[in-house]
Image (cartoon, rainbow, N blue to C red; front, side, top):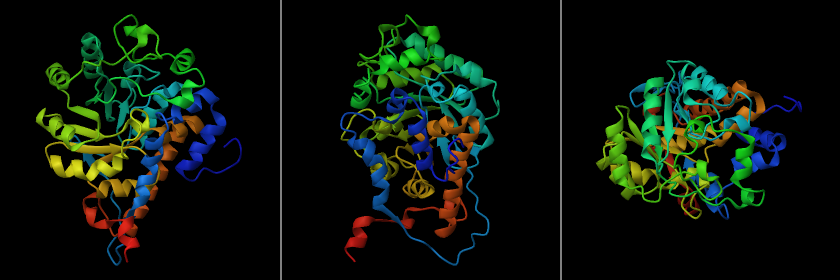
Length: 367
């Protein structure tokens, strides 16, 4: 590393990125909505769950492999859709995709990526790549991007359902807002749609606006008629919406508050996870993102019922540090920490992880 400091945990990569990236780019990646209460809560919430170590169990071999949508991955740590990787490294999503494939895990390609999905498609063709889309006003854009993803060999469609408008990020706004970021990087996936009705928020120029205030569950039903691929909804935070997702027969949901970037003042995603898992049962697969920075965080999320976790900002910070190798290192650190945490709680396989491993912090205060 340039400054000679060894990066041994995900927070080290965050600190390196803060020191390395131009201020507007750092603020773009790191900021949250309004007062950033939810942004902070996503991390703090994991500290309210305590692990119960179990001893004298055979943990001589730790197997972290699991399945998502019937595809086997080496560990239950996957990559969230995060916009504009090109702001972090010249190779952008190309480096990220290679790292995910090398580590044997899944990656969701952002609709707002720096590289087009076609550029990514030829990289590690057997790797698990899912394509993110939004609820654009011009349905032809959605239809076309889904068709492109199918032709390119992507294996699922992930719809961000929590963005009828963009949340206001005060830190970023003070620096000039999203319009300034747009001047720094083109949107590889969206460039072909310039001039279409994309509507995303007042900070974008009209031709790159996105999202649709009128989008409803009918939009999801329509998407399902457009594709043979599994459909996943990202941004579910209530039991009520999780049950509606199950009624609409989507294949999965990501319990997510968009990294604290949308509505401030909502709970941490980990705090609503178990209720959602209990409500939907085995009707669909449940994943979670938001605030995950350690292997014990991953273990806690799995214990609360997540099939896998997704990480966003740490991947970008790894990319900033050392491109593909930086992303691989971030995933390796998190995987190593999970493996060690599994051994120390007596779990040799993912299927050994259960809610019995956890207690809430307030339970200990009563002892």
